[in-house]
Each structure stands twice: as C-alpha cells, then as structure tokens.
Length: 259
Image (tube, rainbow, N blue to C red; front, side, top):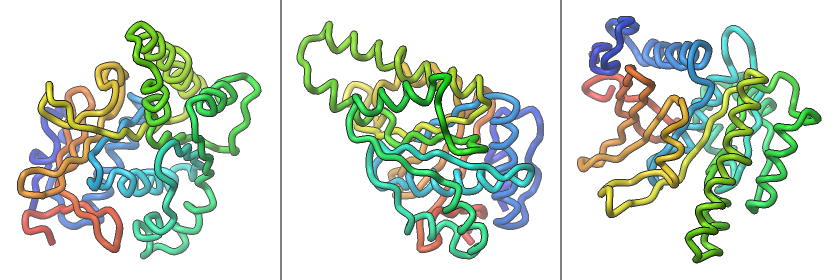
C-alpha cells in the first residue's frame, strides 16, 4: 500500500496513515481539499496539457465538492473553452445515480464566446446587483485565459499588450477574487497549457501572474513513461498520486500495483 508520506510531503499534521482501499483514499483526499478550502485558500487552479484529463478531473472534483457531507452545494460553471460534457460527468458518477442526478441539477452552465462577453459577465457577477443560483458556493471558470489570449493576438504593439494584460487582472481576476472572498465562494480556474521553449516545459498562459495568487495548485501531467500524475501543492503541503482515465471517468491509482 501507499503510505501517506508518499502522498503528502512536508506536511506536519500527519494527516495520512495507511490507506486500506480506494474509498478511503478518496475520502482522505477530499477531506484535505475541504480543510484547505475552509481554513485557507478559496481558489483552486487546475492545469494540464491536452489529453491529461483536466476537464474530467474538474468534473470529478466539483461533483464531490457539491456533495459536501456538511452542506449540499450548487455550482456555476462558466465555459470559455470546450463545451461541458455531461457524458464525462456520467462516467465519473455512473455508480451513484442519485448523486449524479443531484450533481446534474446543481451545476448551472453558461457559455461565453468573447473577451467582451467575459468582461460583462464578471462585471455583473461582481456588482452589488449580481444574481447567481441560490446556495452557489463554487464558481468554475473553464479556460479562464482562452478569450483573453485570442484578444491579445489581435495586437502587435507591446505597449498595448502590456495594458491589456494589466487590465485583465485588474478588471477580471481581481474582481473575481474579491467577489469570492466577500461572498465566501470558492473559485476554480481551469488553465490551458502550452510548451514554453525558454522554460523547456508546459505551463499555463500568464503563469507568472497566476502563480502569485494564493491558490491550491493542481497539475495533471503525463511523464516519460506515459503515466498520469496528479500533483497538488499548497504552501508546505504536496500531494502526489498516479491516476487513470477510463469508462469510470477519473480514478486515482491508490496502490503500488494499480489495483
């Protein structure tokens, strides 16, 4: 079995002991997430290359957060990139039809197709007159930088690009943070990543700015052996686990043998 020290590094709480089965593994993982969101950060950032399963994992994560044992929640899912997949959601929760039905009924979707529409939505959301579904405690922004990156490509002048980048954070990201803090809402940003030759690795767009936000950082990566690795970091806590994508959606590989 995997011992906790192999999953949690530099954690002084001794949160994990031996893991006996997959259900206990998931319980421990989501207890960690609940505690971090409740007592520390209100933001989760998920990043991963194409094919790593970040959308599948995001739905898996959000579904479990909605089913919080202490208080059933509602989520607002904002799509700026690829459409929301109900089939993917069904795969993640196909063994729990009643939970799946609740999750479906409590994820509210909206799509935005341009930077202008994204700005308007955030203005409405962060204004005093905003209206979101009752008991909404999760707002997921899928491909948060997608429309902005397209807008940025319209200009060649460096000074204009710099002004746009600054306005993106002051007029969109910062208001979202303030809204989340004031209304006790958790934000989840899903990032597209691309290869950066200077860094010799995949990284999210505007990574230097996004990395400054106090967040639970979750990266989904595919290593040289084609193994899928989830890495969660928050201050002195680091969680690492293998995972797989199957007809059952996202699944942690919780034992050394993969059983």
